[in-house]
Length: 445
Ligand code: HEM
Image (tube, rainbow, N blue to C red; front, top):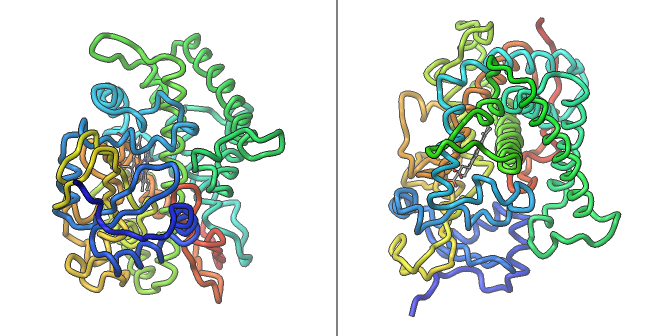
């Protein structure tokens, strides 16, 4: 008989409540009590076996994706992303979709979007008040949403973009303010004033706007467009098939949901850590001023090494998606355990990134540890790993560098005195509390 690794014995309902309210203390308490591997149980979900030993993580990330299924583990996202989403696909269907979606996200392509990212960031910075506190997370959300709408959807400023933006912002806030909506049996229409009804209405409105945009693009027949939607509309699979409208819609919503809040929240965490560490802040400014970065030059993966290390160190300490899942198709050994079919093996970035045997002083923020080093993908994996690793990792890393380069060179910023950061859950991501309030002391043109 196969026995799942140990884990909390309290009822599944209490486990999910703790997971929603105090995820980090829960993870830490479980590690103290049960070690590298433990099982969590949430009502309506398959048992979740969390792992934080690099050998086990390697087995999972390099294992057969047909046996270790990420799509099945992501099923909770179905009502948000749509059933045709890449995130929910497994096997041959996933490989086909990934081949269609991957090319626009390749490193060199990213350079095309640099100018746009910089202009969007500058416009947002121009509107910041000087001398008055405001939440920086709301601002980074504005930046990353506009980057997606312009670079990924290819929308031009105007009524269409405003209409879509308004609905997406509202939809995201309903879901992030009501994390319980992630639970399958609460995803029900319980009447006109309920949050789920609002999500469904907004989704119908977003669909209508997107389908109108697809039709307009087809009529327009421009070949000079470089946005990701246009590239996807032109893409054909091996059999020469184009994507259908519903598939396009599901993939665009997937890119939006996967790419917007994740990048915005990571940016907010980088700013939070930098403001808490004046020496890091000073070193970053020196690096940026020396390079005079952000003045239209491309900011590639190897540019600005200290900024790169600071982003990575933030992602190490605060991987905003703390774990990823692979549902076992058949019973198999994973990480030294004989696991039954149907359980979800879950590499936990949060716990792996804080192992004292892998990281010296694991709880200390120390960007220098990444300088000139390439950590193993089984020890450091803020973007997940293997065949299912984040499709937008290069895009996000490039965007974060541009946005931070502009912010750190253009404004003198400090944290609000007395602010004590806590980790709060927003949908599936972990974010800084109160939107991470900051004060701008000075702004350069
Ligand atoms: C700092 C920002 C980001 C973080 C931390 C992040 C993190 C992640 C993680 C942890 C996964 C799951 C990987 C796994 O299961 O192994 C993922 C998947 C994915 N991400 Fe990201 N992501 C970010 C930005 C983006 C952006 C900008 C886009 C696109 C515009 C994007 C698109 C995707 C897609 C499409 C997937 C699913 C890939 C698949 O299932 O094959 N992400 N991301």
